Length: 277
Image (tube, rainbow, N blue to C red; front, side):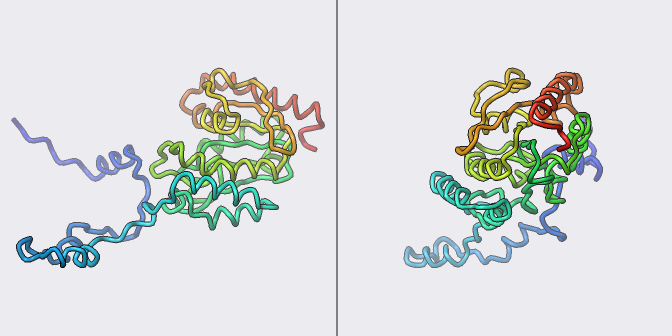
């Protein structure tokens, strides 16, 4: 039987990209095997019980910051308390930059807080940043962002008349799905963000952000196009769910339904004033 040929560099890169490895954490490669060889191994027969604790302290590798996590309940409580005290969006952003209760902060390149006009009458909220957003520090700047721009332009809006954010402000490694704990830790911050922006219409993009903010257990096919009441604690805001632009890129046949949702948003804004006001 003939051995399989070794993969080419292009094939290896394609494999890593498919696995979610799409960025390097350092400029130079690190040979982990060479690092382990530099630590002298002590023969088991020469290690006494009194020596073991000291040897373990000297040779144990440091724990990466990304693996240093706060207890889930404590992290959620800390997030709620911090978010509640933010008097402005700028203060909320500073709190997030200094918040260490979510491990995603230590694997992301930068915080992705928001984009657009904080005084806009309509606010769009997605799930989490992707690779392009992680690089630029702004939400919805990749392919799905360009589609979102076209979607809101279809109802006479642009980023100067809309406010855009995500439930999760840091990119999960490899664009994986955020864990329930990560969502719960970040939820108080986006809730406070919505309260401070105080839009007339809140638009949740996709199933994860809809379930997190609206509190429904139903899928996006059942929730999209329906109006909900979103209570900030000080005001009730009209909220509507629609498809995430990334989903529309994969399933363009649903753009017609999304267009219906956009028309409903434009109508709601028109009932309370012109979309351009």
